Amino acid sequence: WYQRRVAADLCYINVSGKQYITTHSCLQQYPLTLLGSQAKELYWIPELKSYYFNRNRDCFESILTFYQTGREFRPLSVDDDIYEAERKFFRIEMKTRVTESVIPLGETPEQLSVFCDGDWKTTKKRVHRFLMDPRCSRWATAWHIMDILFICTSITLLIMETDENVKDAFSEGHPAYKYLFGLNVLVIAFFTTDLLIRFITWPGLINFWKNLFNILDILSILPFYVSLLAEAFEDPTSPSSNEHKSYVVLRVCRIFRIVRVFKFIRHSQDLIMIIKVVGHAKKELCLLILLLFIFSVSFGSLMYYIEHTSNDKFSTIMQGCWWAIVTITTIGYGDIAPETWLGKAVGSLVLTMGIVFLALPMTIIVGKFSTVYEKEKEKN
Figure (cartoon, rainbow, N blue to C red):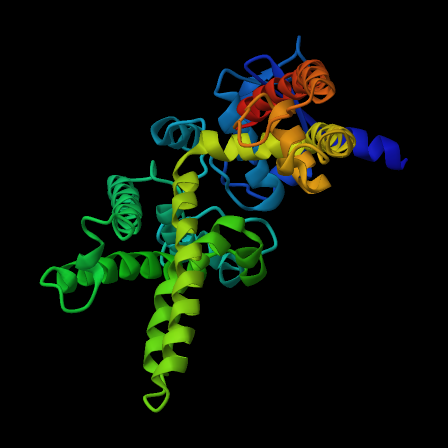
């Protein structure tokens, strides 16, 4: 009896040749929509024993998700105009008034505030999408372009601070210092504003801290505020101690400022996809690292025992391992080289075996990379 009841509730929908299976009870939660009303009977095809719609399949998967979860997830591979046309066809429209919005059966308007344009949650979603998706509007595109320009400005300032010709301009007392410092403050203010708005509109406080890019953004602006606090809490009675502390703080801060380079990743879906692919190929990468470790330790130790009596550059096994890594990877800096005939013979063997044995796992990694990359590309 239960099986017959479930089978009677099944609803078969064919969208441009692809079959979807759901339930009538799931669709009837939204009786004002096309699939939730009797209007869908106009699309019943007896030969197919299903409802047939010659519509966009990527959009329909998002629309079907709306029926199942009550939330919309617009596919990134579809333009806004196409998706809006599909939503209008299936009569899924968000209105400003609750009485005109899509109301599921058995729920009150108060419970459906998530579907209203004037609701705080909807505003958060719009702002979050504005910050995360540059294609949602022209203003969002302009905001992302400004973010990229500020990232480039920040990296340029970081590089200029190490140039001997202009590094004096970043010291107090130089005529250009106040302009460069003001530009740096403007960059940090933009980054801080963007981060705070994303923190407020992010769906879930815990999820915010789970996102790697949010952590990188925090680390990119943290050095500026840490250096300001270090200067504010300096002890005027012990200048030597202050100088040492300031030196340590500045060094740490400059290291973390390098993180700003990774802010570019957020603006490139291809780079994000490559990071995901690397995560899927971690077993193959671990195999490559393990092989490199075995070869470097074994041949580095062997070269040490052959060369250390007549060659001062092989004074420890660590130096032998360094030589082995440089040789196996075919880089060859030339800072360390064998001098005995036996050492040169072993070096030739290491170079040949490095090419052969590193080529095998690299072939596996490239194959895995191509397969996962295509799957991620189709998914997105």
